[in-house]
Image 1 (cartoon, rainbow, N blue to C red):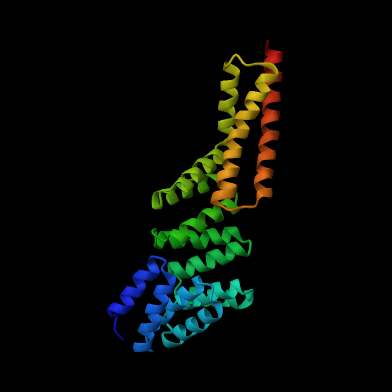
Image 2 (cartoon, one colour):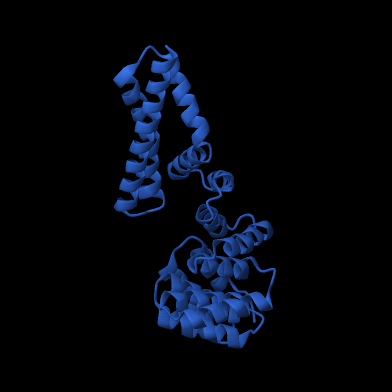
Amino acid sequence: MTDGPSRSNADALLKRGKLEAALEAYEAVIELEPGNGIAHQNAAVALADLRKYAEALEMAAKAAALDPSLVIPHSTMAFVCDALGDVSRSRREAAIALERAPDSPEALYCSGLLSLRDGDARRAVSYLERAVRLKPSFYLAQYDLAAAYQATHDARALARQVLVLLRHRPSVRNLFRLAYVLGRAYRFVALVLIMVAASLSPVTGTKGILFLTAAVMGMHILGAAFIGILAERRSLQQALQSILMAFATGVLGGASHFLARTFLQ
């Protein structure tokens, strides 16, 4: 079995996200080399990403049969079966991948993401942290590790992880994501600073309440807009809940500020 130019070209196309072209290239390699397990494996990945699930399952099964040492075919079958709703088979395939290669970043990522989907965020963190230690450039694992930290409500770990994402892929979205999670991680410090600023300002009474309410709401609305809608693609209902919570926080903080200044005068 050779690693000829055709498969190298297919690998490059797959890496660039040109799925249809990559699939055609892998199919050409498979036609010339029917026993090429890696070509079957990567063709299965392309098919899965194209959501051609039945064909992806068949291709991944062929890859696993041709080369039992391969791990990615089992991870691919795990993801595809999960997408099709066959949870039992999905978890079996993930377990096979991890059993055959306990130190494979791909196998660890598969088990981590599926654990996250099962609602076991702490287990997901364990798998995903190992995956990124073994392969720091594995962006999907880095991204889903941030989601796992968010699910465990570990705001400071989430802030550190979003900074990692920003270093890997500098973008406006990741920048706003970082600003938001830093604000959540240190929200009490931010609130105290806002209250101090309000106390030092000449604005008092009802205007003081409005000032503090607006400041706190401003931070949360930015977070809801950029994180809730653009970055994480949460529902509008969740974004509105975040804004309402911000409003309540701002009103309570403003009222506390007003009462404190009233009794201290």
